[in-house]
Image 1 (cartoon, rainbow, N blue to C red):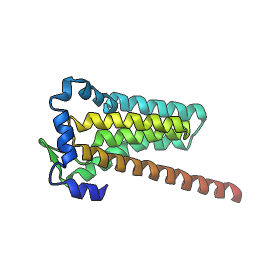
Image 2 (cartoon, rainbow, N blue to C red):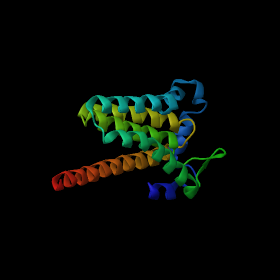
Image 3 (cartoon, rainbow, N blue to C red):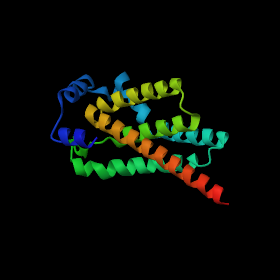
Image 4 (cartoon, rainbow, N blue to C red):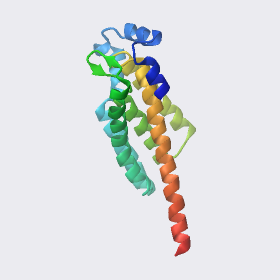
Length: 176
């Protein structure tokens, strides 16, 4: 993610330009409607679903991760934007906060439901549609790719933290 951000900070790549050309005036078109995959209401629905599934499955240790992960994703994206300094129109663009949030919430939902091949493929399709929506409107395509890298790394860190906490809890129970 860092290498990509450093590589694209000065302007659009050919694929960025192609996506922007394809999306010229996309906000009122079917391509622009793909923004619904990264919309805050969709993010809220993903978060509530992940929390509901975790409650149903009694995955108590996952609940705080699901609640904190979206805030960490948005914070990380906002923290990194000035470091890369990539501009689109008048705003900082790299990495896309909407895409980062979408990827993290999809990851939390996969963790809550349990890794299933069909669910992973559904999440990939969902993410691709969200990426296209961002890439033809508010962001460059490479902003969204960087966000996928950031979001997946945050999900991996969440899994590592859950595993470490689980090991500590097992050791604590053995000492009792």
